[in-house]
Length: 441
Image 1: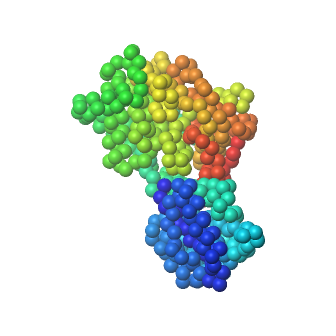
Image 2: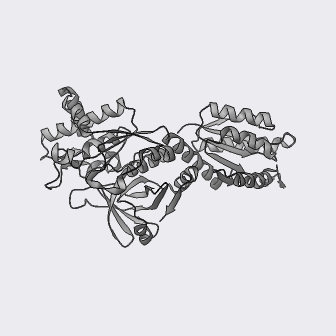
Image 3: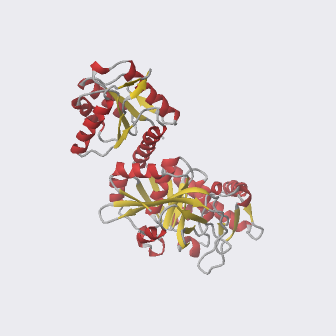
């Protein structure tokens, strides 16, 4: 996460000890939440001050701006700032009266908030409105959530996703409009074919494959019936993926496994992609770009490794999420991380990850491409202790917090991105920044 701009807007007649104290309190408490700030050094009290503040923040490359209403201010001053930074995500933060030495005090911030919020709404700006004291925990959480969502939205514009092949098995919801995704959501997609990856893998030296195979052995227990040939072939594909990501500056990759790798090359991509995820590259398969972008969003919001699963069944309010054989190793319990032969099936060859996700609170989401628009569907729930699906496949049973019937009514594809923790607020803020709907189940 990069820096977020912070500027206090005040009328010069209202700048006093209370104004300065509240501004410093807001900065210090946000910083303690892990938010890196680029603070404009003084209160922007005049039209020229506000323009200078906006230009400084824009030049500094901040990923969003918190406009702190430190005191009463004039709309024209605040608007001078906004016209310089309106291309960035914005949060308007005002605060109410407060107690000081037994008396209720005001800087005029509350009045400014009510006044300028109306101005921003009338002008049609998208922004996060926050009204609360800078030492209030709930208020700080709201502003910190905006900061993470703003960073996500801006970084998504600089994200490159590799797509090897296209959507597997004619999965219609995995198809996407390349240009529309770039302009409306942010990431660019670099498409290549399976031959590119296979050709790199076939040209690797023995020592490169040795190193990759040794890395796989450190990540997981290798079952006895996995041949050295299979392990090395998978290790070669893992190394090829790393090379492609480095050469093309990719932050994420999706590989169409079925049928080119699973049937023709006779090595599924489960293990190479799972290992790549441990290298910090968001990884997925089956060519479903909406799923990959969903995973990228959760990764940028959390700074953590994420995964995905197919919505494969539900019983009551418990939904089973399960991929064919992909799962980042760090998301499973250490003593259970296993690489084994793929479940017997005429259409699949190779080795897979054969362990389950750790229990815990999770957020599950999918970005959906509509006709000329996008929306997000998401839910939270408790990941339960889960067994392997059909004795082989990674899985996680999730007892959802919401309405399972509402979820099934909104299904727009089978793949869902998964991260740990409740990221509802960040998802809502992210959707607001992009101007798309977020529907919580």
